[in-house]
Length: 276
Image (tube, rainbow, N blue to C red; front, top):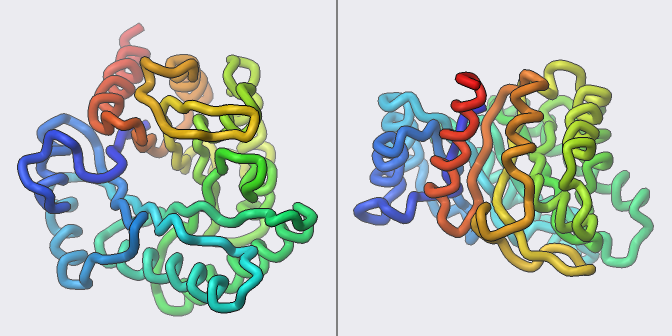
């Protein structure tokens, strides 16, 4: 597994993506997730420069698309805007050298989850085909969501990933934990997650993982906010051990408030498993 920061490290001197990449390299980390969460505001020329720096420093890149996405929106303009935000994230992210485009897919809005699933699946199939036709070679990564009112259970996303080319899940273990009201926090449950990945996607699923990790505060309604790993009850060390035991490959994005602190913490622990 490789370890990324969710955005520019806090300790970066300056606020540019380029400076952030150099800081990621100094920290001994493996890459960065470009945070387009407030909008896709990176120009095409800057994206190309970001790619150059990432390649020069052997760093990986991924993208988190804007928060304002709901592929089950009732209003046509909101639905069209949601699709466009994913498309623009993919287009600019691809120019920057990112392969994975992560996003929160939808809300149920009181609809039958099965109907929402069909709706979302149709939209993502069309979008994936459009990107492929335009030569935008990325993987769309709908993320497991942190509230039961949001579309994005593990099984929903694995089914979509199994059925549509160009779609793979982003597994957020903190979201699984919060969405379930405190479950998904035992060795048995972590094994269940990876076994489900293998059941739906085979070995390619285990060898191409995109994971988000952080601590999390939650209630009976699900996610409240992210926490640093050591301030939460998430058994992140056990998650890393299970990933190691399964021979999983891919990368883990630290979304903790301290961003690089937990990314370094996880990387050191994971590398210690090899020596243990």
